[in-house]
Length: 273
Length: 324
Image 1 (tube, chains in turn blue, brown):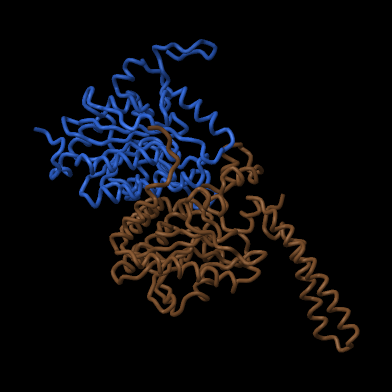
Image 2 (cartoon, one colour):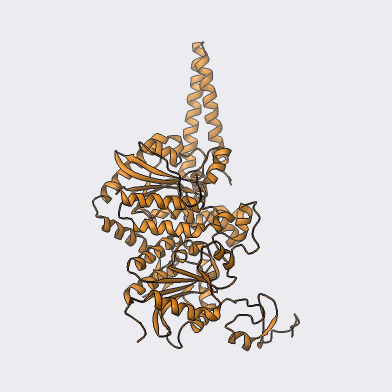
């Protein structure tokens, strides 16, 4: 039942961003916000991600009170930041904490694209680093859900340094035998992709997620080569050998649980009793 | 607002050209009186150049710093390699896919000591620029760098990297061969090393492409170099949908060497000769040599594990985070 433009949107219906078909919200939600018609995986807020990933009521948010100053006094940053906070109820673009999957303890970070495009500034980078280090501290696997347009311009060079900082934290996990799994969700781009995201032990992605280093337009201008139709999608990146597996949202929890328990076989904490 | 270094320094460049023409004339002049007159003119011109530079360089804005960092005649990595090192042997292979000339690398001696050098390389003319891909490295460049870092570790050699790139290559090929993974893996490798690493930003420190080989114990910036998360043009286009606001963006991004020092993200700003490194490359190189020598000497007092930990602590501390 398509809605006419003039009408106020009916809260019971939603239009699929992929096939444009009108869907029942109840069906859509029950299907984990994946279109039952075309399988388009819609972006999730961090709360929705927690809900579809972790055991019920097992997630505890940590580092919740960290927020960014405006170190460069960048034009309009403070206003935009406050606006994003008010709109989302988040302090910054990424949430960290611990939760369980099938009873197994996991240190997690979940980026939320709705907050300033999931951009990585000082707080985002700090929380990613803490989530990775927490894996070492708690002796449990680390899972990071990526969703980001890249580094946050408004924090300038400090944002660029988060690429290094988060990479350093991945190194800590590697030294200590802590498995780290990254999940690329739509979109995973630029500074995030070119740092901690791409050096996970295992990299999974949601179908059709946009994944790339440079904006598609930049790439198109930079090259006369014909661009593949699926350029910078999860499918293209999988074919390029840069990720390990595309996983349907319905299968994500089971896949993560399985990988964490197999790779984390030597870890004591959080093992299923 | 000037769009290039050439445009910005045009009055000086014109005067400099005039001087060289007058000098040629004076050399050929046999008449002593005429020659003296020419020499007076030359002196006048030189004084005007000096005044001009003094005025211009005393009020360099962030945008002018960007232009200067990108200036064609600035000494590039190979220029520094030639003056500061001996016995450099360039090694090309990434052992994976291909040769990338946007990054040069290889072993050499610095003050007689074996070291590994890795640096971005720009080109000065059209052919060189094409060959160097404007110093925009592809995955192969970073994978070659990784090989060099591994060799440095194996043979206990300090690493010195020179940073001078607008960005990593953003093309389709680079994407399909994993430019993001290559940059991340290169940073990771540098974190693993137990030998000293010193990086010097000599021109453009362009975002991921730059930091991919800049995970050092000490990061130094030449006075007129810049280091930024995004080029000012890109920032202006995204934030204000107007690439023409690049000067505002350059100011907002705080991408100058002074700002980086103030933010605590680099250890030292290296003074450049009056009028920029290109006006006296030998003096500029001497300053770079002294700085690298000092920092390497200090770093070599640390054990391998201390060096690795120091690098971790250095980058782990970066960020402006508030809250309990």
